[in-house]
Length: 376
Image (cartoon, rainbow, N blue to C red; front, side):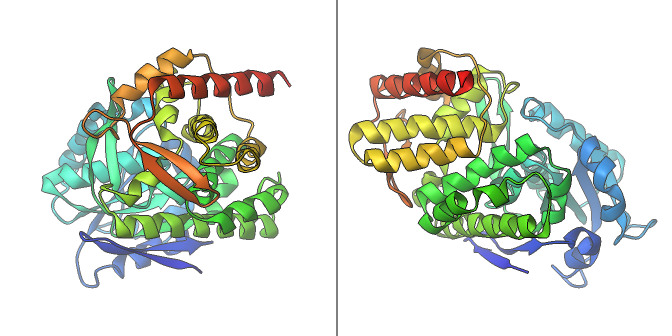
């Protein structure tokens, strides 16, 4: 069972990856700080709880301070708002949560981001652990301590860096994940391969049929665990070197500048996050190709792999609108957009001089590819 370490200036913790972790969760949490009392509060969605509540509750006492208090929150990016944080905090207060409360984020990226932010501000800070249920959350958002919520003006504009006590990635949870969500999550693994790990990229090329198989066989679960482990290793190494995105960690935003613009343009309702990142990554590849930081052959390999792990949902927006929306992106520095471009498969550079014209041409090329691929 792989256990990867994240070591940042503010916290050090382990990411445990394997099958059956849910049924031993209480014991694993107790081992994090032996002898320290805690009262568990689990933040989850009704859908996740319907599928997995029995397995989740199996290791916890049914009554008393060790019995979990369940707080429900709907999944979906449009519900990732400050009102949700206030509502959850009010429910905790009414349930008598104090400084010994321990939050368990049991769900996808939205649940994880909200729970981590709630843990950062409730009574000025309580402990929390991540128990991600979607592939995207398992390979990306559950690791690294980025938490927060959206404003109408932009995505993740309110939040904090708040590292969890631990991350438990149970691959069994993928059994009930809709295929579209799994494919969308795999876009983050492709990103990890493009920006940092050429071996992961090659594995995703070679084993696409197994990873995307319709049946959840032992062979497929092993392949998914390999991809998850490699993806988390990338995230852990990058975050350990740059916790608060002052340098290296910015490479994790590959595909996200236009990806976030696509989400905003579609009001967070039409595409899954990974799908928007996939289209944003293709646009970034076009900028890189035009600048000559990658060859046409490298462009083709990367774009083809993104599309192979689709289909990516189509959407309606103009290139001009997408470019305009990038100015509300939180990754700007002194008013300049930070843009991550590949320089090879497994290597990138962050630049601040991508012009509106360049970005518009890239967005137009991406939209043309979307129309072509949708028609075919």
